[in-house]
Length: 316
Ligand SMILES: Nc1ncnc2c1ncn2[C@@H]1O[C@H](COP(=O)(O)OP(=O)(O)O)[C@@H](O)[C@H]1O
Ligand SMILES: [Mg+2]
Image (cartoon, rainbow, N blue to C red; front, side, top):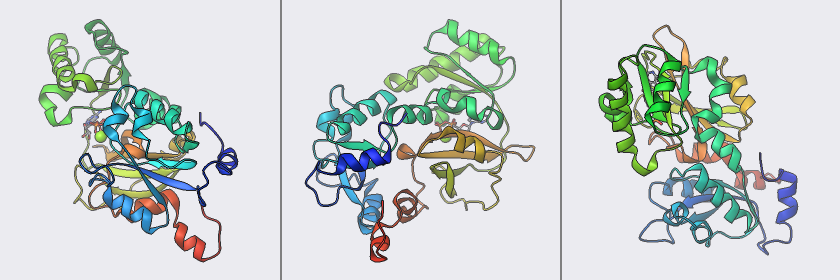
């Protein structure tokens, strides 16, 4: 659930900050060595936002992920207004602390804590998308008993392993692909290696997904308020042209039904020609393929405030 409606946000903004224009803000991680500058990975988006008349504020990522660090992380963020974050991945727990620290400064994250969790963690979106994504089961922890139970639930055959948030896809044969779920010890060896590689980043528990054969590169689609606004290549294959024939009709009402402000949905074509969802993620922490112009993303997130103002409209 969101913290406040946009009407409430505007009421909060009045009289809060003393800033002339406490409107929409983009939050970006600061550079580790030069804290007054944006992290170079996100600098193009910061620049595009400023050019579009959107205020940019910097967040200390290391503080954000440290226990009790959230208030320190947002100490440089001006008070009041509504914010969208674009930055490194954080856990749902850290996002909750971020959201709370910003709220104490009168700032509402457009994506509330519960919305972030529902997008960021597979169990949050799976039920709504189950007809268009590989069948999946998950555990709450990382013990073998739970894993074996999940394995039995999914049934025999090949599977792909991840946790609630991420896979170890770059260690495919060691820690992602399970050739046969019925082979209990071999499957557990993959899970053990996965857990070891994920270390402290292990999120929630194991997820086992039925293996489906995909025959295309992945496509990343960007959704604002339940509408697909951009189709790009996937960050892993940024130089593949983004196809213009993605069949989104079957997934559109399902993604819209989630009621999330800003998400990405990765899709690929299965061997039988059907477009399938590989995963959904929170748009704030989804990597932008280097082939995607930052202005495109800023425009779908904020509109062009400066252009709108020059036409005498009220933006934001
Ligand atoms: N059920 C599946 N069947 C076949 N391949 C899969 C399946 N799930 C994931 N993959 C492959 O594994 C990769 C990583 O999975 P994904 O869920 O996107 O995790 P990550 O968050 O690490 O990107 C995908 O890009 C896809 O190539
Ligand atoms: Mg992925």
